Length: 266
Image 1 (cartoon, rainbow, N blue to C red):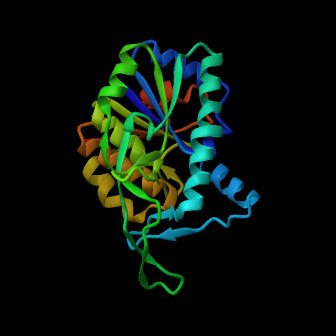
Image 2: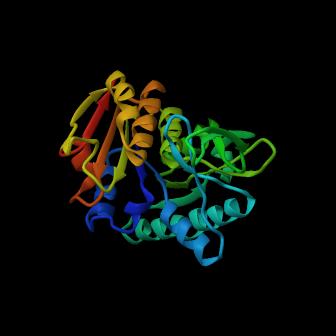
């Protein structure tokens, strides 16, 4: 079984072979897709006159600040436009995909962050209201396993529900890690727009979980989250985490074969 996270910036520029590659892989093992779409959310916010806001944690993690209005736009774009576009592509090529958000069936139950500690423009720590951002506390693995058993390919948008039934923005990479851990995927694959982790312009082909944790603070914003999510998945029992390029031919099977990608193992 494999959990695949497709980055939002990659969805628009996937290699033409990707969908058929997913179909090929799904014929031999269960596949769950979790997608992003941050750039499309940002575009829609700007079109609607809502200025996007991003914050940086003391650990260097950059994320979208989500107030109530942004949460509504985030849900609309992620669960509507992007999710259904992916499902349409998969269905068109004979993959029985089903589009879901983390709210449906409480696939993602999350704890709302009451306060956020950020680093402000002056480089100082600052505490702000947590907005509508959450951290996953539980995954409805029974529902996902049932869908897989019935031959469906779940496509999940990274929106969670809180115990108070608020809709929460959650990080897509870490959401995928939680899915992989909950259903005990053999592998998790992060599809991005580069071959994997690059250090000094060279591809890092292999890392242990411990090495990945050690190197993470030295990695740039986007890749840093993927390394974090990869290590979290491995800590939850996933055997292998892969980071590969969605613009390469047959990106899924290539990564599974450890061709031009980063492989992180225990």
